[in-house]
Image (cartoon, rainbow, N blue to C red; front, side, top):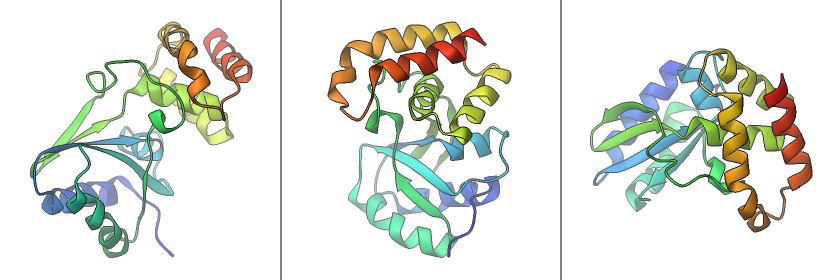
Length: 173
């Protein structure tokens, strides 16, 4: 059984992944990894990443790094579950560079919207923590939802009405 991913373990993962790269790429953290690295959670069950551009060397390296570091790593990002606004990559906060890799937090507004769409208890706690830390603004979140609304049809698992209710509920608190 793998261990929880703490900030130290995530930093070790970044260093090790940087050694696996065969060229430059951007690695975006999302979900629990963002929560841990920005400090409102002490650990997460898994480290969700998106690699742009994907590199076979990195994808192959993930399997061994999971075992060597004893952490769960998943290829997952908000754009796997909901549409995201254009320019998300430019709005993704920089974390660090390791070798030829640059690490970022996936656009925080997109992360918050994905969490509101899912609306699990931990997700809602995360979005509240993001708001409390000034990382997401409810009005900006609402505008981002309006921007992606026309593309929700491309994500048949998403119920637009319940997603909109979750965004409105969060924006009004």
